[in-house]
Length: 499
Image (cartoon, rainbow, N blue to C red):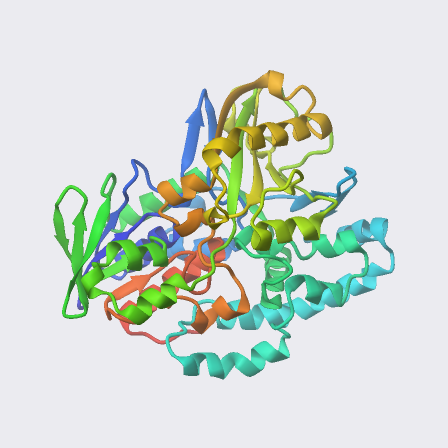
């Protein structure tokens, strides 16, 4: 076997997934992480005995992890424990009335009937329509590289047939008449940085993915999943270097020859894989003299997803037995469509909000001290092209959200907080090197999907590859893990294998 010396920049899920796959192939793989622990967006904050997952909390494709942990021998349960959640989400309207759904069709239909009995037939039709979308959009295309325009032309008829020109919201609305239920079945693009009113209908497959394989939680939190992947990587002889901040990718004759660390150390490589944001990689890690003008223009023209404002907090009071909250809670504004427009298009922070309230200690008490509760609350906000000064805006916005939660969902909340930390778009820009402080990199719209998205193999440097949210197929754990599959196959010179 022709073993290669491979450097991977960044230890997010895309970098870890690629590292495991390439190490299992017998390559000499070094994973470089600028922080003091692995995980990228999946890092963990530990405050006063509480553990808070900073990154993704919804696990929807456990079979992808089964494949990873099975490489070189072993199984997922040897490394981490996944537990299924029921319901998947509890979704509240602006009056506090809620809708639950799960993979139990009878249960979900009974929930639909509470809002509009006539939509039961429509929901069945919607579910039946999402299977072919999933089979084409995920099974066939998610781990297929789109390096040439001909790759796109081959699938264009199928995309038209699946009505990908419709938004997810418009597609759901063909089947569902109740406005709140339309929101419940079309919010999923927000989980990957997309606008439900502009993200193409192919993302309706997320609902199918959830129903088919469930929504899971990793016991110990997402941080436990990161550590499990690190363990697997190191068992395969992969090397993880922390506090290794890459300053530059070395380029010679249109090839990446290694990297230069910020401390001046030079590391040689046959292949470089970047799990850093694609825009950041081209604009900050590639020497300006080596960049082509058209690439600069292409990267500069990209539209980025919204950002997030997230408050992590722990309470000395238990709330799991009070009120109607579940593990995953989504609270939708009465002014939902207008609020989404404020975030994505007007780029203003409104006085109302739609929130995701995560309450993992309902499932996993180990994340909080005895008798306490662990939370985070997330609000989508515009990215930094808005011009908002978060050094001034953050604290008032935090107070507004916490007051809302105290008044409607968590009585006496602020008097019981004993641990707290919040992040805003500046965190995504300064700590995660994400352009404009975007939380999910390139926005998932039709004109930035597949071939139109930054490619998994650089168009300028033949041995530079990309994994993560900014390349194909996009953000979310299934997306970034699929990008690692693509990178592995490209590096190995392989074509797509059967799913």
